[in-house]
Image (cartoon, rainbow, N blue to C red; front, side):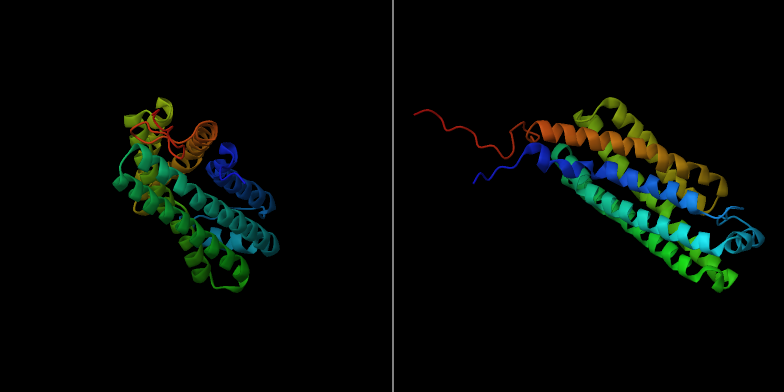
Length: 246
């Protein structure tokens, strides 16, 4: 039996970056459809708005929060599956230090999304049975873990991957430059923890960043699926060199 696997099949994991985007967007759409009508509460909303949000339609809110939590959890797992591909890319074309940063920051972002989804699930179980301060605390915790910190740490990943791609020219130039711009917006979104206007950077880092993830995921899949991996020296990895003629 041959020990070699199909290059296209072996590189299918690179598509987990697209799966991360699709699952997250699906969660937003489905939870939005099932959400109760009425005001939408944010951490910056007044207590009156939060109370109306929680009491408008508890059954619909329960379904919306649970569906959103499920898809966000699945999306986070897909992101964690994609991080090793980004780590390998930076390690191949950059330095081990940068690769380690990608692994740590990408893992942290995925874990924060898992935590945010878990808190959202707990909030769906409490519904209107919890006191307003408890509900607000859970809503704030879900936001603080799933928004700026998750996006900010992912911005570190975008920076390292894009800088590596720019120097090595291993990705299209527009992907590298757009990644640098998005990484800056993502990391600056952390200012939303102290300044509400900075929350405008959160959807930039997340939703425009989705386009970057799709582009990088497709590029890695097509390149690794069509040709064997090569090291920095240009030597083909995983293919034995022919023996010299005697």
